[in-house]
Image (cartoon, rainbow, N blue to C red; front, side, top):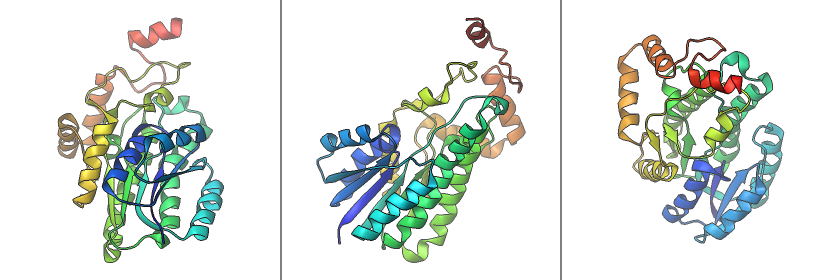
Length: 275
């Protein structure tokens, strides 16, 4: 029986960083890397030498694809999954009324529903001392206007991961959520719509995704149920526990020069609209 690692969202960002780092920690025969952009997965073959890289093209917005392709491969090969890394996700910075409904549905499907399906399908192939890591977000601990769908989907991930960690202790399978703050990767390219007003203008605590994953892997193997990297991120997590969420949302709106309406009032947004 071959030992494997499975990573979703492996084509870029933290999923790619996690894939390249986890193979140095966990000795396996293969790493199955899953994403929609197959050509980026193919590039990992040249970047990972510790084991065989198996690209699997799956659009995580489509539950039928996940079930059909991933389940079929598991049933055919019957591997032992040592690590399941769930790293796929995307967000939108916009007022709820400015987010297309189908895009919002896709956000929930990729950010949470796909995680749940992957866990369901993977658990029969996991044994004692296996690990599951899920990318949640710093936005999972508080309601965030103008990111409310993304934040809500990541709050579901955080709750799912922490409670699942308790439920799988009897099988000695560990589950951990990662709560990054702003990260230097492709997330921003998707989150910002060039045809709409800029709503997030103030970024505090921007971190290197590779460093976030380095900390996450250390925390995973020391059996933490949450991984929080960076001093500003840790401070924000503490403050959110102390202050009422109503006040936290007000502080957030003030920091971004937002007033809760679809029309951004900040001069930077007005300039963009005029152009």
